[in-house]
Image 1 (tube, one colour):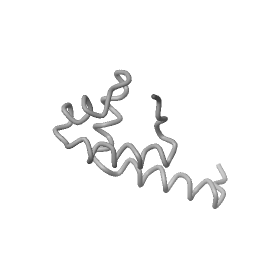
Image 2 (image 1 turned 120 degrees about the vertical axis):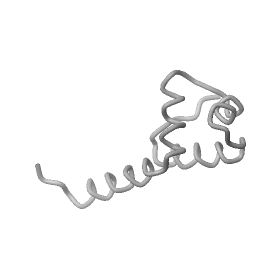
Image 3 (image 1 turned 30 degrees about the horizontal axis):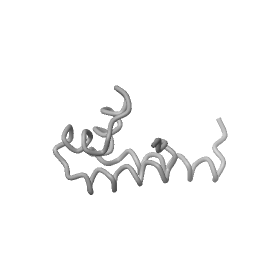
Image 4 (image 1 turned 90 degrees about the vertical axis):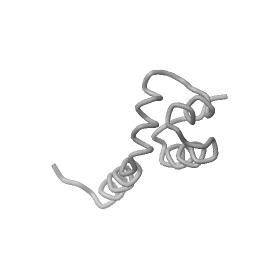
Length: 68
């Protein structure tokens, strides 16, 4: 398989996004269904601000989508 420079960069960005244990735990919670920031914070033992920060990073990398 040939890996272009662009694809390699995208893959490196994905690996970077998933390199944090809090983000992995957050994604695992979301796999069970949509949850509020408050529910995620309670489930992870984190502040809402910290969860929002992690969610922003995952949204920026298009790993998750925001829904109101």
